[in-house]
Amino acid sequence: MTDIRRTVLWVVFTMSLVLLWDGWQKHNGHPSMFSPQAPKAVATAPVGPASSGVPAGSTVSASNAQAPAVVAATTAPSEKITIHTDVLTVTVDTLGGDIVRAELPKYLTSPDPKVTDQLLQMVHLQKKPAFTPEPVVLFNAVQHYRAQTGLVGGAGPLPTHNTPMTAVEGPRELEAGQNEVKLRLESAEVGGIKLVKTFTFKRGVYTVGVTHEVVNVGTAPVTPQVYLQLVRDGSTVTGGAAFTPSFTGPAIYNDTTKFKTIKFDDIDKNNVDIEKQANDGWVSMVQHYFASAWLVNEPGNREFFVRKLPGQPGVSGDTYATGMVFTLPTLAPGASTTQQATLFAGPQEENNLSALAPGLERVKDYGKLHILAEPLFWLLDKLHGFIGNWGWTIVALVLLLKVALYSLNASAYKSMARMKAVAPRITAMKERLKDKPQEMQTEMMKIYREEKINPIGGCLPIFLQMPIFMALYWVLLSTVEMRHAPWMLWVTDLSVRDPYFILPLLMMASSLFQVWLNPPASDPMQQKMMWIMPVAFGVMFFVFPAGLVLYWLTNNILSIAQQWLINRRLGVN
Image (cartoon, rainbow, N blue to C red; front, side, top):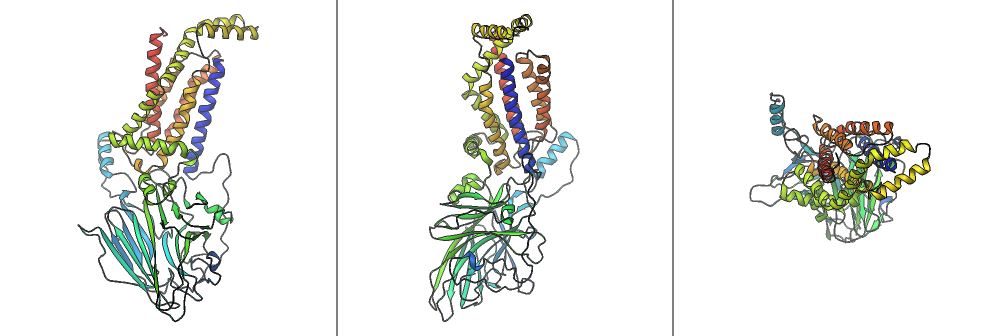
């Protein structure tokens, strides 16, 4: 029974680490060990002026909707206007009013150089040449990543994101004492309709209010439709620190579909299953740690779309769009109406996301363990509010779990201590009855009953802790609050591997010490494996996030302390 218990424990532990390794491989752009990487379909749409990127007539509900005429970007006048707030630096193109760049100055592409320089001085006694890390950029020209809006649905062309607009003079920077700054863009008349876009940037938030004022300056009634879309290519991904994104691509949420992510490959294959009509919801482009989203929280009918765009001039890779279309009231000549939307472009801070729109916190990718990962992050967040350091927060989490599972662990460790005490007696019995397996099993169970030993008692703590361990793995991968979060000394980023492998080596040593504390296996070959496995797993931990290794190392140290105390009380050496 002892050997069976050991086998079960190692199988569970091995499979868990294999799944973690497979997840790591997929996070770093490698194919899964369990499924081949699907080849990407080749775009078949023609490249040319027809590649407008405007939602086609079939996307909207009006029967007379037509794709608007295209204004070639190479010939239309364009001015780039940059707006600065305390948390965003946004560039708006007057060609259509696209948001073509969004910098997040509070989030850098690499850790704080001051911390790195101090580390190098401490470890290598030399100073790294000064450098200035760049801010994280969401919308950008490299990925053809932008937020677009416009009008469709008229009998003829209407103002779209390809229509030149004129900027109204005004402030371009959020000054001290101001809470907001606005940018107003006006289009010329197209199809009897004039479109005015007003962008509102507020202090301290990663959202931009976008108001569409639609004015009928023609002579016939028009029923326009407003589209909101996010566009980006599918060949370039961005990541934080040493990771590539856990998921990159469109995501949709509404009262019918709930939350759904769509892979670029599925769009290529036209394998997208979403509810197109809903009365609420939002669309998003998700990447590791950050996201953009169009939000309209006011209830009202909207149509969702996800599609691959035709070839875009100057864009080498495939380009994809996700968005929503809203039908506005019919406008008589001289009438006007407005439509309000909010554009989010920022970090996946879970508490802030949930306050912006229902379900928006789901863009934070916890994989299939979100049921465990979400409460685990909640607990970590509360602990961090008191402690102020994510590394010590992880240590405190282990302490809380150990306290909660103390009785269960104590029972398991007592059973293991008693097994170690009777190990010589069992070994002698096995030698004496080696030719009588049935009698040997009966005698072994008799010894277990006499000594009050549960041969599988040590399995339960491992079974309980492995899901927590795997959920923490996803929390560390996905939580932007832990991105570039230092612990102490050489550990300057808990979300990436230990740069000097000190934590994995300490974890390996602690695991070997645990093997020594536990009762030996009766089979010599199995006993050798008991010593080899911690070394093999320790090597795998070399590439895991430092925060995850810290969790396991702390757990090992506390387990060793508890096992040692129990062994002393029972007089086991």
